[in-house]
Length: 243
Image 1 (tube, rainbow, N blue to C red):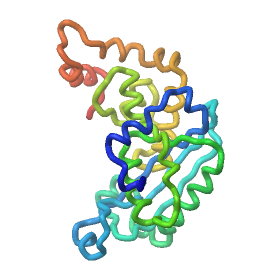
Image 2: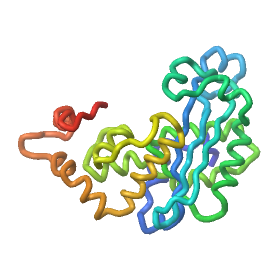
Image 3: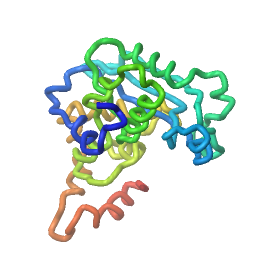
Image 4: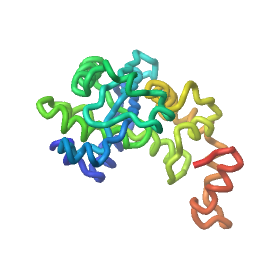
C-alpha cells in the first residue's frame, strides 16, 4: 500500500497495538514544517501543503534508556520560511540555505534508526501524515513503508490514560505530570525529548497512574457532569492550562 493511500482508519489501527507486542526500541520524532503556498503548488505541480524543515528524534531502548538523538535541518524544495514560522521555531531561510534536501535527510534518518526492531512515536498524528505524503512524493524509489508500521500517537495514549477525549498540547501534558517543559517549544529535538519523557511514563502504568491520579479523579464523570466536555474548561483553568 502506498503511503499516500493510508487512510485515517488505517492511521487509527496502526498505532493501537497491544503493549506486549511493543517490546522494541522506541523512536520518538517531531518535525517542524513550512508552508507551500497555492502559487508554488500551481507552478510546480506538487500536492504538498507543507514541507518538513527540521527532523528531531530520540531513540529509547526497551527499558526507556536514551540510546541516541537525531537532529537535521532540511532545505525545502517548494515552500518558504515565513516570518510566522521564524517567530515560532527560530528557523530562517538562511538557516536552511546549505542544508540537505529531504531525500538525503530521510536516508540519514533511516540509517540512524538501524536494523533493530523499532516503533515510531509522535505527539499526535500530524507528523505521521506529513512524513507519509512527503516520502511518497519525494522518495518514490525508496521502500520506506515499513517505518510507518505500528506508529504510536502518544497524545492520544496520554489522553486515554487520564480519561480526556480532547487534544492536550505537549506543554499541558507535561504540566499534568508536574514536569517543567525543558527547552524551547517548536524546536524539533526539544519537543522529541519532552515527548520521550511521556513515552517512558506511559510504559510504566503504575507510575503513570500515580502521577496523574488527581487529574484522573477530577476527570471522572459524575452525576453533576453530563459529559467530559462540560467540565474541561473549568477543570484545566484550575491548573492554569489553556487550549
